[in-house]
Image (cartoon, rainbow, N blue to C red; front, top):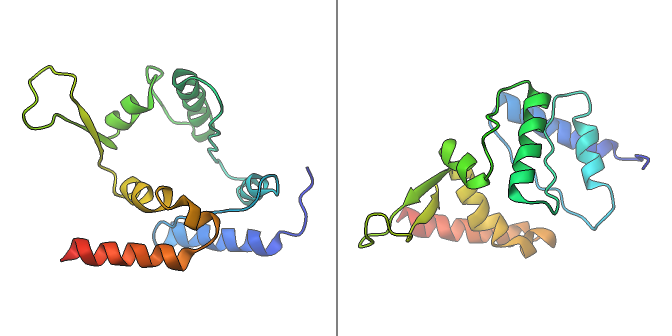
Length: 156
């Protein structure tokens, strides 16, 4: 696939990347119809830099973990333990998930709950994932209003 006329979009992605490394992290959501080049745009913007792009295909969790471990280790030249066979284990090892036993449940019971401890992921799942339709139709003002309303409720 050829890459045409995306100079403005590439410049914006470079600007965001620069801000992410100099000021503080940024989250960028790229939306659009199928097959218009969203992935190509992203890959072009990081063309000469070590970049991890994880594609979730129709594979078992263990197969995906194995694939991701190799890709991350080779791309970033870092150690990633080969024993990771599930995302739950990975997230627990890196303190993204916390295992909680509900009050009143007996020791050793199967009644276990998992809670996301990572603030970014909590934010993502509470707003962007839950209100995915608003993101897809680019109703960012509506999403912003929901976030503000929740902030006001939670900060009181």
